[in-house]
Image 1 (cartoon, rainbow over the protein chains, first blue to last red):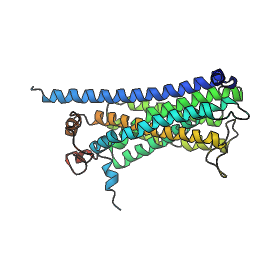
Image 2: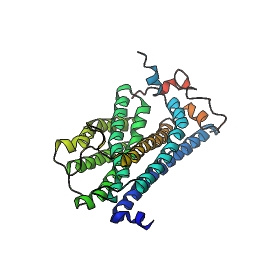
Image 3: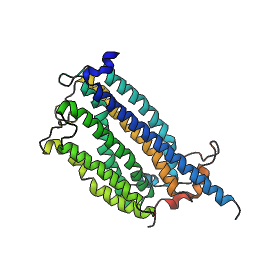
Length: 54
Length: 270
C-alpha cells in the first residue's frame, strides 16, 4: 500500500494530477446540476406568477 | 433526402425530453468506466520503462486533452448550425459546451504541467503543443465572457458563434503542433500508422478512460443544455407540462414538439 501511494517517487506529481482531474469532473457535475435546478426553479416561479390573478 | 430528423432536434421540447431520458444512459456508464479506468491504470498497469510510475498521469491527462479539442469542435459545429439554420437548440448546445470544454482544458494543462516537471524538468516549456492548448483555453474563456457581455440572448448567440467558428482553426493546430514544429511534447501514440505505440496492458485502461470521458461529456452536456433551453423557453407553454410532477408528464419527446404546439419554437426569427 505504501509503495502504491509513493508511486515510485512520483507521488507529488501523480496524486495532485489525479486530484485535479477528479475535482474538475466533480465540479462540472455540480455546476450542471445547479444550473438545471436554478432554471427549473425560475421556470416554476414564472408559471406561478402567470397563474396568480393580477 | 428528408431532413425532418435533423430539424426535429431543433425543437426545444423534443430535445429537452430526449435529453432528460438519455442522461442516465450516459452518466452511469461514465461513472463506472471512470472508476474502472482509474483503478486499473493507477494500480494494475506495470510502470513505464523510462518514466516509472510517473507515466500514470496519462490516464487523466490524455482523455482531458483529447476531449478539450473535440468539445471545441462540437461547440463550433453547433454554433455554425445555429447561425445557418437559426436553431435555438444548436446555440444552447454550443453555450453548454463552453464550461465543460474549458474545464477539460484546465485539467489537461494542469496535469500536463505536473507531468512535465519530472519528465522535462520544467512545469511550462512554451512548447507548440502547450501554447496552442493554452490558446484554446483563452478561446473558451473568451467565448464565455463574450456571451455574458450581452443581455440579449440572440445577439450573444450570434457574436459568440462567430468567435467559436473562427477559433476552431486552433483545433488542428493543437493536434498537429507536434508534427509541424519541433516539440518537447511527444507525438501521437494512439492514432498513428502502424497502430498505437503503447503496450496493451497500458493501452486498455487508457481507452476505457477516453470512453468514460466521452460519456461523461455527453451526460453533462445534456444536463446543461436542458438548463439552457429552460432559460430560453421560460415563457413557452410546453414548460408547464414538462415541470408537472412525474407521472403526469407527456409520454415521449414528440409530444408538443415537431408539428405540434411546440413547432413554432423550431426556428427563431432574429
